[in-house]
Image (cartoon, rainbow, N blue to C red; front, side, top):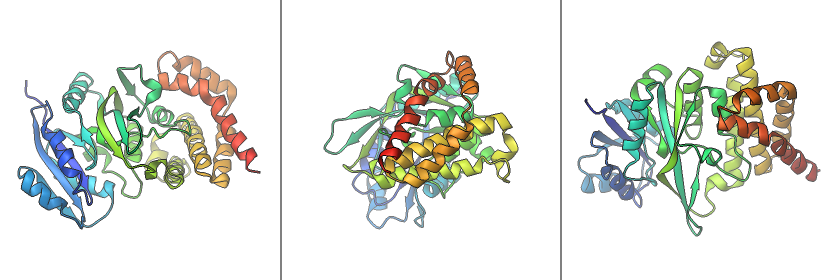
Amino acid sequence: MKMPTVSAVIPAYNAAKTIRRALDSVYAQTYDNIIEVIIADDGSTDDTAEIVRAAFPQATVLHRENGGDAAARNTGIEHASGDYVAFLDADDEWVPEKTSVQIEAMDRHPGIGIVTCHFTRVTEGQDTATGCHVRIAGEAFLNITGFEDWLCWISPPPDCYMLPNASGLVVRRSLFDETGLMDETMPGSVEFLVRATARGYSVGVIGRPLSIVYAAAGTHSRSAAGKLEVAHMADSLISRYDPSGVGWAAELLSEKRYARARYEASLFAAEWANSAGDRALAARHLREALARCEARGLRSLGLRLGALSPAAYYKLSSLGRRVRGICGALKGRN
């Protein structure tokens, strides 16, 4: 049986200090059919491209004007010819078996359009910690079957930063042809994943750390500015789910699914805005979440899904704590 082909895509901006480590991890993969490695140089002003050409002449370097990570990933996607596209940020690395494990999972689950994984975060001056999806740490594999489950899954406690990391993503190349490329106006890959699940694709989660994510002390994702960026991202996603609008989500979602997604996204935005210190934005989204939360309906939903979905069970059991935490913090700032 022919092994599926994989294209590795690495967006890079002034990555001279880390690109060699990232590429070493790609070429050390145990999977034998990575047919191309594409570095999308996002307008670097250092010698990133020269380092790649000298040390990894087999890799392809594509130059583009600076447009951000999503734009650079899109450049790589457009040139990728593999059956799958695997993403890696230029300052991160993969463990050797990552590609093999993820491609095997996608072969076993043909309905899965995207597979991601846990990651290990290495922060300067701190102990190494495993991150991402800690609420389902006991699961070897989780199938996210709908975009509302996805929104539930990415809604973390405010003291965590558990959004999926792009360096863990593997996507079927054909999916981009059907759903479009990544949104270059939004940070990270969350919008693309929500859009893909809204269109009926499933996301598989490997319950083990297969990528290593490096962050400097005081990294933006942990800062107030980073948290506020996440809150505004959630705010933007919410607006796309408005059935009175003209976006793709409005045409695809039933009223019930829309209401559940808006509730989860509103609570998600409230938590992050509160954590970032934006009291007005947090209060607005909390009011929206509470307005959509019908206790009887939520309890019934949790009883039906709790046995099947760890994320749904977590949602039901932590709802009170999450709302009380936001309300308490907002009250304390009066």
